[in-house]
Image (cartoon, rainbow over all chains, first blue to last red; front, top):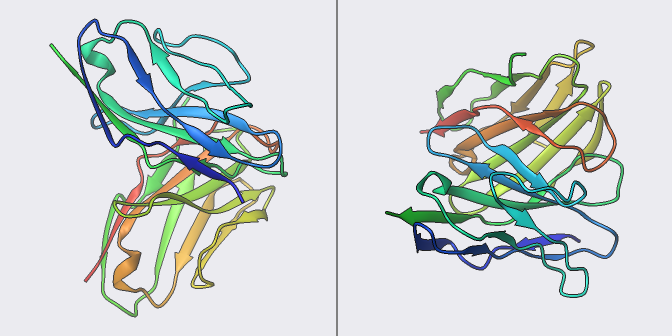
Length: 110
Length: 114
């Protein structure tokens, strides 16, 4: 079975502060990990995926297989980063089934 | 390129009825997945279709079914509606059928059961 846990439902930081949204997973094989984001009144959209190893909007995430984690980080939060963030896992079965974490609402205060 | 389109946006039904939701994927995308989103359970996978075949199915009762047409458009059907079926139903499409592909989501259909 595969499982994704985001321990924080709400994370509130001030503009310019570092941000870390935590994600832990449970999966016996080699997972594909993603971060999806939903801004206010917008649809859910892909932010980044671990296989790309790229930085999007200043966010990065590193897959740590030893700790089974895929935390999302940004050194300096901006007000426009306020959104709902979902960590998701796709197993190495054939298909695009995503298992989502419960989500973390990030609020960046001015 | 137009995004994933879901119709209708809102639906109100009563217990015992059935409902059909529609999803048009991004042009060229052949994989369509469906998810249920509720405040209590979050985002849960329903099923995935690729080339008109159901490839994966989540842990939902048989009242939930779907299909995909030759143009990749997909429908999902829920029969004998229950109050607990009230949710936002999201459709997502991806370009190819391999695992771990980025998925593009629609705005969803909000289903309310009275």
